Image (cartoon, rainbow, N blue to C red; front, top):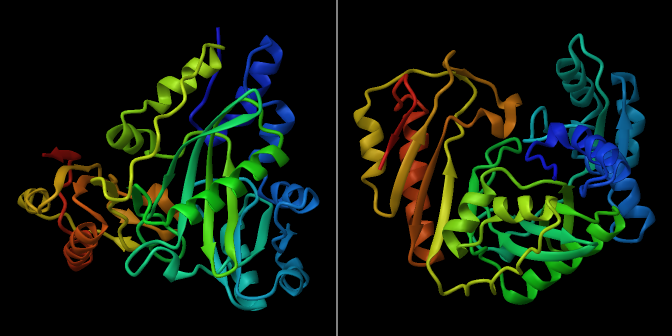
Length: 350
């Protein structure tokens, strides 16, 4: 018997079930840290892994003192959350107070203000995201790296737009990223389970954005498509106490590149368009599948973060240069339509 979750919002519950039943999973203490962005920053600082300015904010009146600690600009985000929901950059005390008042509404929530980690575009090259994620399985405290995943550029304020494998980073940088990730996992007390760790590539070296105690969204699909390694099956085997085979060596940068491109629309109302526009997307070279599930209300809000994506494009390219060209075409097509090029009913087109 075993227990596992793929949901950020079920980590603490799953840890409690595992503890009660005597099953392998994150301990309750570890799950609490993995889902608490403020406490996680504290532990990484105390353990000497990484010091990043971070302040807890419970009320708009605390904005001034918090910003004095972390500096501006700063990243405002919920203390407990996922998918970049209600996450934005603030540049002044007034802006911070305004956002806190907007986000809090009638429900009390704790927020954190974090030092803004400025990415170095030279680490990945133009037209690419300045951060990566590390996908790992932890077995009896031993971290086994499955992949270092590259990213397309974010959509403002901090909305993710997909995954790329292999990541367009030099082997030496990838090794530095993995060393940092493993140090963070040890410091946070992870002993069993899957992890998804986001790492910013700065001019001063890799910096932890956050460690998540679960598989990353859509990560299992792209890892299996690129390497053949089934992370979901491995996570289930780990939960059951069965042997987990080591991932195969990472493909070389010269190998074919696979990607997911998430259709993240601008905020505001969307205008449905003819279904033929989906076929136009699918006809672009390198596109294998266009999977669209638009919202019933046809209204989006940047506050929903990555959860506001209305579809995913799956494809491949011979190398990162070709992917860059395809990315430009996708960006031009997608941004040009302003999300009006989609049919009201969810559809998949190959």
